[in-house]
Image (tube, rainbow, N blue to C red; front, side, top):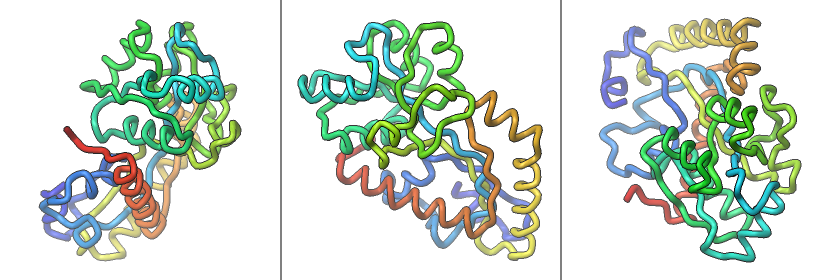
Length: 248
């Protein structure tokens, strides 16, 4: 991102960032660039809510049962993540804070080994985006118990949101947004935003994202993109601080 932040503002350089971008400001206090001053939003492209998946041998089958088990067994329930500071990690920490439970984080080097151990019953809980979970769930290798979103995922219509289960603040996702160096002329940023939005909201792209990948097709104005990232940055900064998250 440093290269993009310091690129010539001529409209030839753009970047696509993911959810980690919002957390990095807090996790990495000495970034070589200033996200607020050096970069500007172009368009929010897609949002993929995390879904809570549990092992088939786990002693719970629903969110209510998970919370009850965790409260009855403080410090004994573990949750996997794709790495320290990842969206999966931070959303799981948010779950721990909201449900007032004491769970243990088990970081993996990526989602694949975490999912493998979940399917193998070595770890009972893992939050991950829908694309990685849809097929294992259909095959009966894992159980999906909740979506960290304010609305259900079209690709998983039978999986309730955490809001429906009494935890409206339990929202976390991976997402993608396009950014530009902050000095790019506004008319160029606006034209790029409109083109990205046109593509994302086209019926064929929306259908593929929402029905096959469990990702909400967005497309937004530059102002909406900036507002989204600002809100995400503040939200995850609070979680990181309250949960005492570190990269070690």
